[in-house]
Image (tube, rainbow, N blue to C red):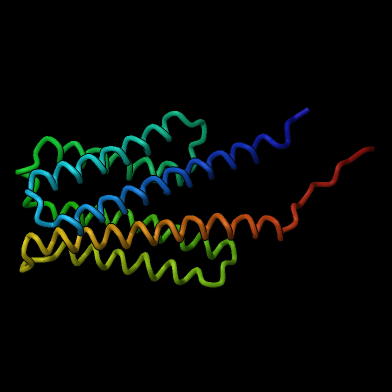
Length: 205
């Protein structure tokens, strides 16, 4: 007899893994934001090492979660791609801090834009689960993209100001991601509880 619960169980495992990865990423963003906002005058090399360590840890978590898991969903694949980018940036920041300091706004701006794209995806998940204020998540994601573009194109801002702005944006992205993650999870549970499961008729003749 075919186990009818297997696909559902695998799907639940994939969702839990996505949620864990996303929560870990949001916590790392918050930690990085606190460091950058709290100590903006720290030496350039230390800033690069901190950013590099955070990106590398997040990247390795995302990559290992994908490689060790049995599921290969589109969402996990997208998160793995972001993890590879983060890990690569982390290694570069740790090994070439002085060289990459001048590219800090460009790299961080691009990374924030990429991460915010995942937030856009979460907002449409909220819409799929019939969450009335899904558009709030979409607006927050678009705002994060705009902030990423601001960091990317900052030709006249002082280096210390750039560091503070990057920190504020990471704090914003971390808070928005945590809110979106738990809201998606809560909305999904409510949606599945209220939506009847369609069962195919069994032919007993």
